[in-house]
Image (cartoon, rainbow, N blue to C red):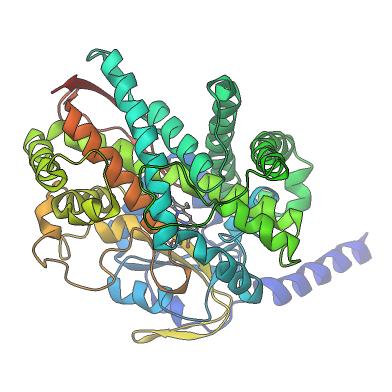
Length: 492
Ligand code: HEM
């Protein structure tokens, strides 16, 4: 018995020395919640209800400032919300690896652009960058306008009743990304499948959050064999099969010679389109990517390309409903820019400067991606402090955008701040991230949001169900309203 106790003791000591021994680290000078021996702050993390994680992190920033450290066993997680620190992380050319929780999405998004790193990521980014070339976005304009007109028509038929924004808007953005980037038209009779897909994306976010807060579930073997892990696998298979359908559909169309058409700068108003998926299928024919790779990218772009924009438009319409003066000013600008034209062209959108400032302010207050996580591969200096390889860094975009020193009256909706050079640091405002791993779809997103909001403001007065009401917020993969947001669309 004594021998057994001794053996267990020695094994525990070796494990402790190998994995948990405190090493010298400059980050230990930084503040943070008090740590327990060995487990660090894992207990606090476990105690935070997943849907309150955003509140907990915002509270920590208030308490410990814009640099604090959280320790999970022997892993240091550095949380930052100051612009210079954020610049040091995001602008770094080598530290481009995403943090561990992103890997929880691996069975869904695989080695797609969001999750991959190193040479693989560089190669994919090179293949995919032309997808968002100006001439291609120009071709997408027709589809986005068509989809917006369908939404305007549907809203007119509702005759001013209360509309729950998120379900309507996410249908719109999902149909739009499928028809533009994927070149696949979703029929109305696919609405059950789209609903299943949207619900699956929502559940993936919640299931991921609940995994983050349970540190023992970070281990793949334990998680995959647990009831939660099995439930997660079911959810993933719904999301993946929807994307598979989209790929099969496009392949079938290409087999019938309905492939991509030449890009032509004079084709606004016609139905020409060149899909991202076509580009990938062509790359497959040239042996640059395999089917698994295509699936990963389609899943990545379907998720990133619909959910983020839907969230921004939902919060945006909520803010506009409370600010009639802003709606009127958008409406006046749109009428002036269009000057009687039938179609909204890219140059019209470029001239809508006030609307652009409004969208920027929406994304400041409600950045669709509230946090970014990096795993540090190479030591680097963050101002006066050395951040060692092996550290995890959490960039808090949400808190950055709400800093009073950078955005006076930060809680107020003031689009004018983006018209008058008020931004005080190049990294004070990063809704699309920045540096090498910035958002590849940001111009597409701006185009879609500008088209939608300009058409809505031109056709309707947006009225809140309850003035000043704000939903509770939740941060999973994206920033979500917990409570439904209702507004009325009263025809002008
Ligand atoms: C309002 C809309 C959007 C916002 C606020 C947004 C924000 C972001 C942010 C912050 C990142 C960096 C994420 C990270 O490092 O973890 C990102 C990456 C990405 N976004 Fe967006 N995004 C938006 C729309 C879109 C759209 C419409 C698409 C596709 C059509 C898209 C595709 C991507 C992809 C593929 C990445 C990964 C890029 C890489 O790592 O190379 N996003 N986005």
